[in-house]
Length: 140
Image 1 (cartoon, rainbow, N blue to C red):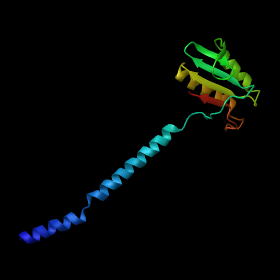
Image 2 (cartoon, helix red, strand yellow; image 1 turned 60 degrees about the vertical axis):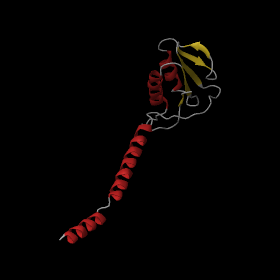
Image 3 (tube, rainbow, N blue to C red; image 1 turned 135 degrees about the vertical axis):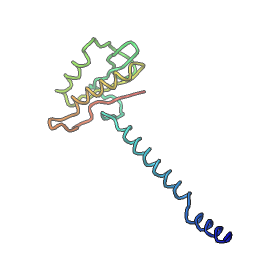
Image 4 (cartoon, one colour; image 1 turned 90 degrees about the vertical axis):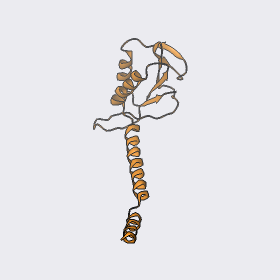
């Protein structure tokens, strides 16, 4: 009887392999994490990185407020309240000009909200689909 019990215990141990279950559990966890990362990394607006061309509108977000710039490094003139929306509305009629937003110590949340607003006006065609990248966000 003792021998039969030991043989049955050895047979059950061979049939139940924990390493396979552990491996499958880890793979499922990695798959779920990958899907979550992909869902989080998709931005609301299109982000393209390139330098501003002559004629593009460049706005700096500084600790002192918003300012116009020519190269994204130095401010040329401060924006008055409400001037951002007027500028974006004016760019709707000029499809060859783009909007560049540079974060230089200002509010990241405000920049994200402004980028989403500008992208909704400048990048969407009459059919409601993205027709061009019009807003360029520079976070450095």
